[in-house]
Length: 110
Length: 115
Figure 1 (tube, chains in turn brown, red):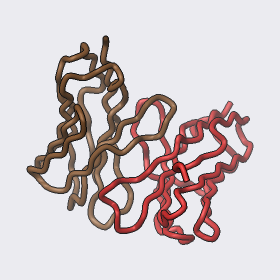
Figure 2 (cartoon, one colour; figure 1 turned 45 degrees about the horizontal axis):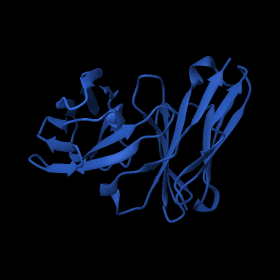
Figure 3 (cartoon, rainbow over the protein chains, first blue to last red; figure 1 turned 90 degrees about the vertical axis):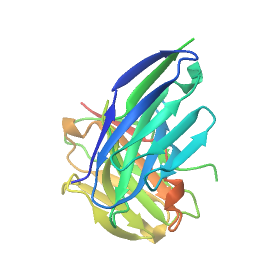
Figure 4 (cartoon, rainbow over the protein chains, first blue to last red; figure 1 turned 120 degrees about the horizontal axis):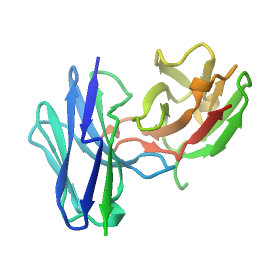
């Protein structure tokens, strides 16, 4: 059974204080690893897809990386508007659905 | 077309009542998914349609749950004889076959509270 574990559960940062969120996964035949951002009361918003170990993707202050066992979401010089829950998900084998982790709730203080 | 639309946004119902939610996907998207999310957890897969065909159902989808997508356009999710454990956010997402790399587009969800 596919498993996705995210850590930490919650993270509080001062504005400008860079950090990383972790996503560990156990799947049979990874087809893609996805990062989403979710604001309170809203659906997840797509950020990145990573396909193979060593791949990296960047968007503004966010950078996602992938190894054979985990993915990191690096946040550089975060701003209060980066506060949200960040979700990691995997797609494996022939499945169309995603298996999500429980998320990391990020709070960036001004 | 501004995205995936879900209605209602909120629903409060008494235990034992039936409820129905609607999802209107992005018009050109042929795949539609239903997920359920409880507080502090990530979304859990319920079911998936390609066009009008329901291709996969999770074991989470008990016989009280039924989903349809007539004519491959909007979809409905019905829960019969609701229980308190059904209280959750029900999320709909859509995608276009062959574009999996860009991820799903999710709607804002329907929050169900069973009292």
